[in-house]
Image (cartoon, rainbow, N blue to C red; front, side, top):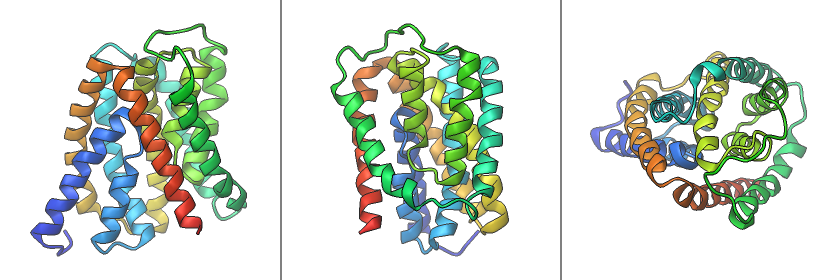
Length: 252
């Protein structure tokens, strides 16, 4: 492992725990993990790649916790997850080919729109509603589309999955959160696979933070299961807005 010093390692582990907690409920754990890795001395590409490593642990932990609570059937999500994984690999490979500047510029607007949707839409709770598209159509369209985006750029992918499950699959807020995690895990795996060829992640640090993120995600998912939309909605709005502001700051 890199010679970072115990104080820095302790900070990274603490950041991993907090990132896992927040990500398991509302997504956006990278807003914590990436800046801390940059502060520890990682270059931007290394920080993103290392964050992908620890993010896998958080997504897997949350998916396990929600499955144990009976909120999601992992077997039914295997096909959509496979589509998201394959599409994310294609997205990562297309980074050097496709122009992404326009999409990067539009991202803050899209994220703020999602935040406003969850903040202002009346009656948005944990009750399921009528689905607008079939699970098969969701698998063939939305899952690979967001997976491709996750490999291509990444920020806000969890929020886009969440919006799709609420608006199109008809899930309540809690079930939508639960179903988001396995797809997020799959597309993160694809992104990490691509990063492994173009970057040099801090594997030891990523695994150490990943263990902390696994623990944080367990705590967050259990709390979300108990409280539901009353916790998920405000945290989702806060993290999505913070992500939009961060992206706008990067453009200035």
